[in-house]
Length: 438
Image (cartoon, rainbow, N blue to C red; front, side, top):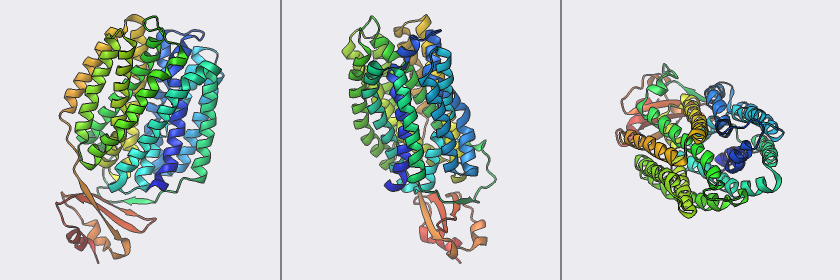
């Protein structure tokens, strides 16, 4: 599993490292550019997410049709161009265009779908955790070095580093990433993409993903501006003192969250705990007058974010049918990135006309409503998988296979296997095998 997932995680983490490097300081940097206002700064912080939202579904669907690797290459090239535009921008509007281009390379759902293609569902939670862990490590590195490099060499240097990282990601794509198997899906073949949003399980995960990402950009608009304001008087180079310990705590919290959420099949409980931490974090950041307590709020935010991150993607990939993974992840990430853009924009807008106390209280109220909504979430049904050689299967029997206990079946043409996904304990494997064997 590790050999299959690590190269893809490396591509995603390199890309996110580039995005995260500028997050701790971009709101301060953008505010200094010609034509800048707090509202436009909020758009810049979350601007990449707007085009991510627009292009997630097309990229996900395109990857289902023409293949994952070509789609990844297109996305990385667009991201590279956007990073270069950002690096050489001299006013707020050019920077905004560059951020929009960065987001247009919307490959997140493609990579997640590719991991789902390559890894059996029984260990997919670990694969998603590895991917989430690699992103979190990129996050931690960026929080530590981004403010230092930005303060010493300029934020434009961070964007140049981002461009270099995208080139490294392309090299990994062509030298290390395996080609995913060809999947032929037949069971429930009449299902449509619109069925994704009609599935209550997927809809709940789409909302959770969106809220998590939206609160992320609210935090990254507020944290650096508030810490460097007259309230606390920090220098840009000091911001790592808040981000780095928060990210270390977030990484430490991720492992137990994945174990409890995946192995114990209790993701709902992890999501609820994370939301409670989000509420506490924004209340603290909005109300405290102590820099040390503010940093505690920052740490609570990152712990909540990192507890959720690997579970969200894993749950979506579990609930989606095999032929719809790209589209399902595309829709989920599209909505999440739109929420990311909206979070940054609204945070900038309210910062222009309001204060951090009102913003903190407002976010806490919204997160409380989110908590109440999530109470009706159900933990996922546990499934098992039957893997049987295609040569041992009676095609007619397989085509007639219908049962309330069977979620789907499909053919892995590369490995010449028939895979049947069924409810654990509801039907015996030997009984199921007998139903489709020659």
